[in-house]
Length: 246
Image (tube, rainbow, N blue to C red; front, side):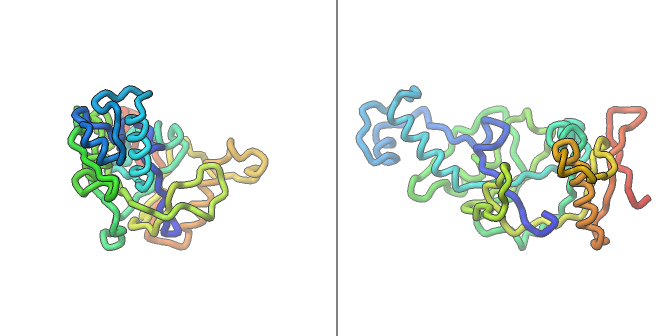
């Protein structure tokens, strides 16, 4: 990301199993099945897992969603829950980003997540054209109200190029030129001072220390990036960012 690239993940890797999950309409008819699958089904209105129509529709659903990848950001930087869940239990880091609409890919959506109490049921798809504009927004930008504390915004990209120059186990599903600029780095309060002298021998134990040195080295020549570290409040359940410049 410091090099201007943005890593993307397919919805199949999201931690919420409801997120971006295309479901069969309960009123699916014989005619619908013939249109979607181009074959004459023996059964149409019942979809147990063993039903060949249901299985075929699941394959089509995965084909459509396989074309999409996403990147999520939040409006908040001091959430205790998100630091615990996504920041390696406060040993990780949080990047401050500035969005440039002029750099958004043509096929991409960038919008605030809509949180609801009921799963959307009005999604319509076409096997030839995939998701129409309304279906894209409903499917890719709707989550359960249980996640509202994240205050998420999501960039969803269709047909992003897969990552080809990374050989690690956690390869990204897509990489694009980033519409975001890194303007700040905040380290978790458990992210210790960097010392990567024995990183090659014990990479797991020293990963965050090594990352901290790598990031600071990378941004050393860029004066427009702020650097801070979270600290715990002494009087309430909250975090306070302490600037390295102070």
